[in-house]
Length: 205
Length: 424
Image (tube, rainbow over all chains, first blue to last red; front, side):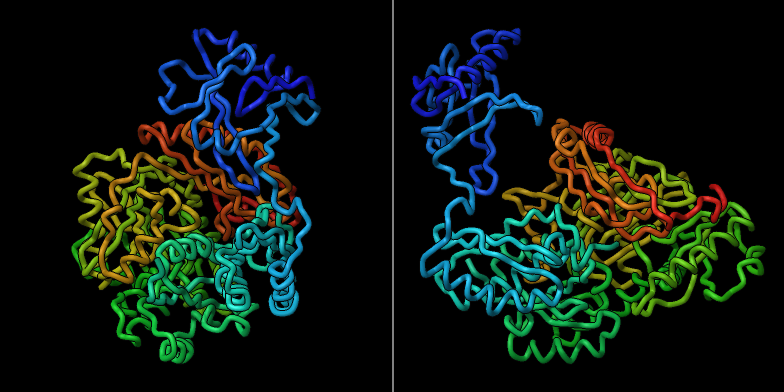
């Protein structure tokens, strides 16, 4: 990572990122361009950010505007709330090139060890009541994270990519977990079902 | 806010629609029991959440449904797809809930009975005859008007549908259809009948609607811009609004409504397939369910209301939500299956999704799974969804996105030779 410019209150850019942005602005025929930085999806599973060149007419009165280091940066208030302290770098590697966001406010799910009585109780229900049943279809479910009493689960084996996974989740796992651990407010499936290799049921016409 | 009512949702284990219906129910806050053709893994741990049923044995399944209904009453019974529609009608009648008559639903599931009902009306209808599987096709080939279409009486989505232009093609098509029917039948109990109809030339459209106390409310007329002339009938594009003349569109609505009435349907979703030519509008099929596969995802209304949500609201309250306004120009491509084999990898999805207007690309077959083209195929490869400023813009976006996909299929030993059926 190159030197970070911290003149922006919300988002800071490395020199490599600044150079890229200045280049994009110079390549464009329009004048007075600024760069809008937006959080398209603040999901802790896969947050999505967006950067786009905008003209002065595209500014909104409530936008936060600051100097990013040779160019103007525009951020809407909701995105600013999530982006505060974020660093933007430009990464060029064999796998591809692009802007990389490091946001201290978005901790990926499962990035910290799970502990505490709530996690223990959920684990216990998964091990004793849910996984033995799901194993009949070659599947398993594991606890990924708990945030604000929202439980994040990942399915594997026969459940990953299974056409009936949503039935298992809403009509089985959810009922059992919420009955055993009533303080759970929501259960979310973070499985990458498109990567399943041995789904128990597959959709047919 | 939670709705105290409970819906019995019949979802086949091979459903494409489980997630969409369950999400819709979740948004409405209604409780759900999923009735399916398998024993759910957590049935004992979560009683009332699921119910194992035999969709082909309505009488036998009724006992389980009425027993649960006595403890946790159902306010509606909804079938997600063809497999459950007959049981849903029978169960609803038993429980005293508003629904279509089982006899009418049965006629929609059997293409020969459907044709028979229509033959008693003055609506345009092709010549047809149903033959037992065992009928010698060489013997009956001389009785058939050509070109004709040979199809199983009970399979959906163009499975086993083959055009034949003369006796030799008819014999090959008949034999191939019988093979497909036998392979598909399993324990479904489908009638062992092959339907032969005269081929109707013309452009094909679909109508998606909802029947409310016998009145058809059209949600969309969808053009199928790719020609469907055979020998097989792989549907690819659905685009709305229709580019047909408004008078023709009115006729499509009128004919669909009359067909539904003639069959005896009066409540719930209908999906009709029709052909339009100089003679008028011909109904090919009408099913008492929503559009197949994941195609219903083009129906997104204000606040994210889905077609499944409209269907559930109607089943519970008997009304069509006011959110069901005309759709903006929208479309879906059922990604064509280029050849048989084993799906290796699909690349270019991100590029396809970056095409202006494209909303999503969903691959429904997973790498490693078998890919089988029509007429034998029974799975969609995937779907591309788009919206745009106009129907041509939507169609163009779908085609451009499809061109960006690189679908690699490894050949396997089970390919079907094109020579097994005559050319179209």
